[in-house]
Length: 61
Image (tube, rainbow, N blue to C red; front, side):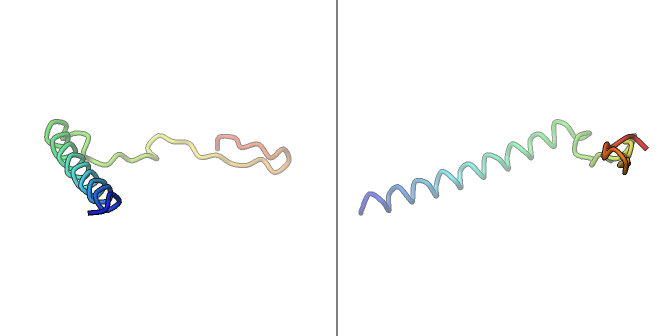
C-alpha cells in the first residue's frame, strides 16, 4: 500500500477518534454540570448603544 493511503487512513481514524472523544466529554460534562446546559439570555441586563450623529461615538442609551 502506498504511504499516502496509509497516512490518509491514519488521519481519518484520528479524526473519528477525536470526534468520539469530544462527544463523550460533552456528554459527561452535561451530566456533571446540568445547570450549565440551560441557555443563557445574553441580553439580560445588557444596555444598548446609540450612535451620536455629530461625533460618531457610541454611547449607552
